[in-house]
Image 1 (cartoon, rainbow, N blue to C red):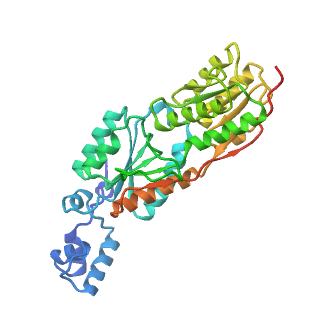
Image 2 (image 1 turned 135 degrees about the vertical axis):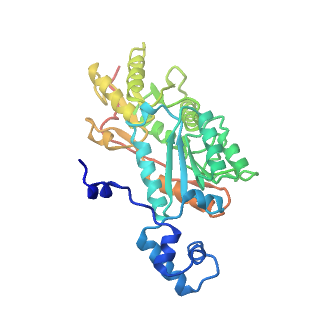
Image 3 (image 1 turned 90 degrees about the vertical axis):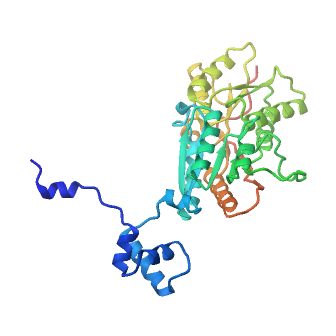
Length: 364
């Protein structure tokens, strides 16, 4: 049998109200409302006393009430329209979100994160968030080759930053577009990064190279594929020598793509993977077939991680400060929320860290 005292202890704590603050501070409820909403009508000393009491009681403004009064929601949104099964194995988004959260938390802004099935559902969610005033702005990831989100967000007037370049994004250093951007973008030049990888592999003597890409339809996937083809053409290498295949970024598809690639009549001497997980899976497939790395097959991972550094042999990888990229995106979003104009911000260009997984190919 439950004792009366125990039942009382289990009762949830009641949230403090304006009435509680008024009673403790010895003022009227209207005075508390004026003080907490930065409105005139109370003296500086009274305002300070009311805020001190509110802090002591642990009072926080109700987000719905703030929205109805036209105040900020105190949160930013991030929606990911990717297969949920691929999220737990990829470190890129964890590092990106850690950088985003570092900046937002300093401004006491919450991150509202949601995973959805497709782009249509994502757009519907933006409309609902806008109508309910749930967020002050959004960070948009995985820009598409045909992307309705920037236009939608601009039409809603919901502050937004696209993380990653849009399909028609001009590379850093190019002339500024005649029309200002609809929304801000923060991005690094995937084309130049791919050129660095090809320079490295071609310089080692590789002439048969396959790129195991990520999801088709993503703007950065299209840019990497295009850059690979451009760099191959510049060196006189045909489509039968240098090509790309698309996957869902998972270790399973990375491994399966590697098996198919290595079973071809003229397998490549080098494979470029669009993330660390697929690169490690590919190295495992090569080892299982008795193919030495890097003599029989050189491997490059697009984004560096601890996986690349603890694998034997250590994987050559493109290295960038992913948390720093997240911080840059969050800083830009806060600037837009504060009234700044949409603009294009260029992030750090990844550099290639040559490790043990790339070398001169064995003689045929």
